[in-house]
Amino acid sequence: MTSMVRQMRPTAEGIPLEIYCFTTATAWAEYERIQGDSFTNAMLVIATLIMLDVGLSLAKLDSKPLARLLDGHATLVVENGRFLQHRMRRVRLTEDDILESARDSQELEKVEQIKFAIVERNGKISIIPR
Image 1 (cartoon, rainbow, N blue to C red):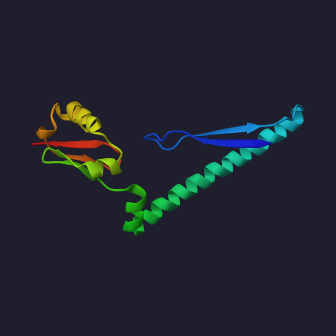
Image 2 (cartoon, helix red, strand yellow):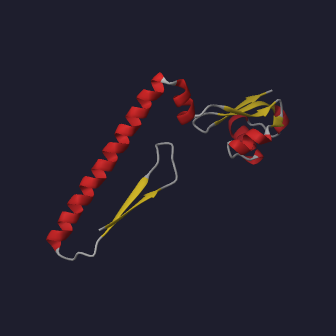
Image 3 (cartoon, one colour):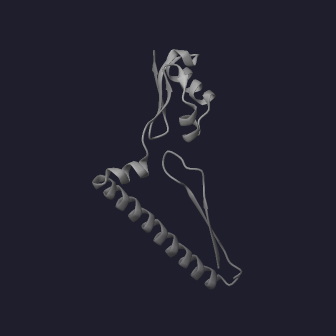
């Protein structure tokens, strides 16, 4: 039996996985056995991921450096109406992304109208007008 796990694009809810299992068996009893094995393996993977998530969450409570490494931190990308290009590259944002967020949240049209733009840990861009 051949298995393949495909990691999809991350979402706000987490990282979706697609699990594919291939077999050349045509006998129904053998197929059911393979399906049972696949289900068991899938449950083991899911249980492992849940334990890893809980373990890291508990470890982050005790270790600020680990929490910062895993969760990141807020990043200032506009200061007093000027784009901070080196920080924007680090968080993979363009000027258009920031201006779009400014229009959506604060109805601002120009970067000069922005005092601060901050990329939060969850990826949301917070805009503070002048």
